[in-house]
Image 1 (cartoon, helix red, strand yellow):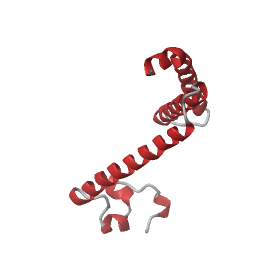
Image 2 (spheres, one colour):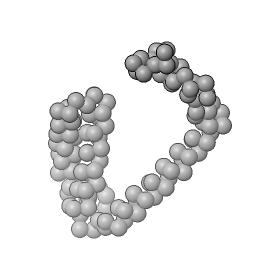
Image 3 (tube, one colour):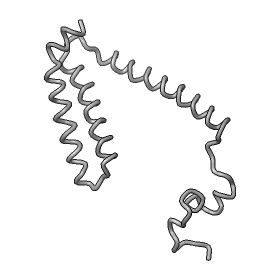
Image 4 (cartoon, one colour):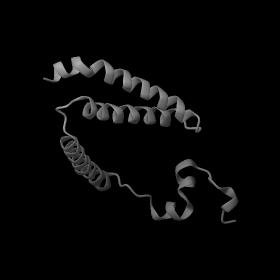
Amino acid sequence: NVVSYFAQTGLVVLVLNILMMLIAFYWSGFFGTGISQKKAIAIECGLQNGTLAVVLSNDGASLSIQLLGIVMIGAFVTVTSSIVWFILAMTIGVRATKEDEINGLDISECGLEGYPEFSKG
């Protein structure tokens, strides 16, 4: 059934996604965003429009099933990222040392002060 559905709406969805991604990529440039942010915005717009196109173009698609999918993906990401953060916290740590926090992370991470006008003296 997926193959026949893609044959019916695949080209329209693909064109919509590509068009929306191009618009989002170039439009976000007007706001001075960097290239990596422009790419992220373009991908997000393409994903959202693809999902919207499935619901609007298919009579058999159910919005409640789409919402269930969103909840399930959110639960999966929450559980897996919690496991990863726990492993990171137990192995290499996820916090800076107290001394680095007091001195400023810009010094410990970059080797210079990010805001020298606010230095201690």
